[in-house]
Amino acid sequence: MALRLIGIDPDTAGGNCPSVWVDESSGDLLFQGWEVTDRATLDEVAAKSPITAHEKVVRLPARMRAIIQEASGGGAANLQ
Image 1 (cartoon, helix red, strand yellow):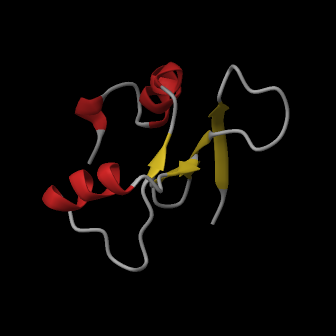
Image 2 (cartoon, rainbow, N blue to C red):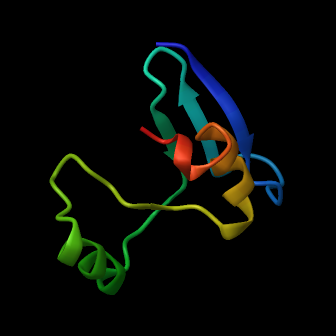
């Protein structure tokens, strides 16, 4: 597996920064962010998409939308 860093939160001042990666062998996107622990948020997500034991919900700041779009090949239409 070869991971390529697409970008980190532009407002990060050091470590522990949210980031977006692409797995070059599969095209999968990887997100490093803040784990969501707020019960109301998790319940809202789980109501439409159950969260299994091996999954986590992460939060990335809105200012990273351009980085996420770049990782997906330039737009949502390019997602497979």
